Length: 390
Image (cartoon, rainbow, N blue to C red; front, side):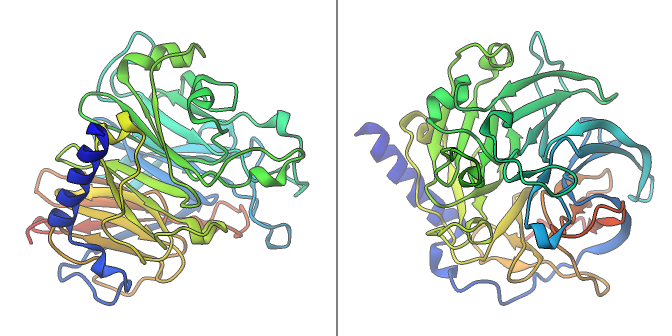
């Protein structure tokens, strides 16, 4: 009961801070402060995730290599994904350093950079979510054998050396706690204490024979003290909150320490009761396994998530193909730009504050059924220094 009461109190605080779900009518206005379009670099294969290095000098892009065959449907290409490394230039644009820093990945999606060291993983290690469902070979042949599935979190350094991985299958320590296979591990985030969070969209399991239990996704918390043991596939403390039929997609920790995530369910064939919901979790929620109500609903199909100061940024991939701006005490709005631009599947964004107070926003564009011809875009936007002044 104590945990239930704590969750109810947290939910009321969310409504007070970010506004109630009266904003369920969707997006109908543009945020007053526009972004400056710096670059649209077309050099990727269905890029899904972006992350800045710990020092901000580099950006890493996950090329998901979604199959790109509309007649075959949406699938990740088995071992077809890779990571690109780019240098951040003085003007904010990106320059390719290593097109294929790491190869042989399956559905590489969201990333996060560690802020604490463990025995296995130095501070600044990049953690990457690999999605394994739905799955196909490069020729479009659908993979139906569930024994092929190997969902996991891969950890690597800035030179591309893989340092270890955390398994997410049904028999893994994570699977034993959640009771499911993380079929579509999607996004990652660290809090200030070094705890790792994962959003699993939980789709695609039904395409295997026999079907793999997924149940529409959930959110994991891996304590810092558990990371090394989990990388050795040893049982260690961790927590899980189910999000039935929601399809969690983006996840990020806010400056106040709250764990935010969103749902993409409608785009993933799920019911998604929130119809594109914005959620806020506390550590008490993870202790109790309780899912609080979303503080905003009806925003479509939300994907990426990050913060520019206290302002929450989500991406929406069905109704508007836009970046959604949600300041505290205000309704969600769309980001405007200094020139006309049409995004194609804005996915797992990355934001970093610059020395002049402005923010760089990196937007990978996962066009889904676009062919993998190394010409899909990543867009770089500069947000003004007063962007988070509301």
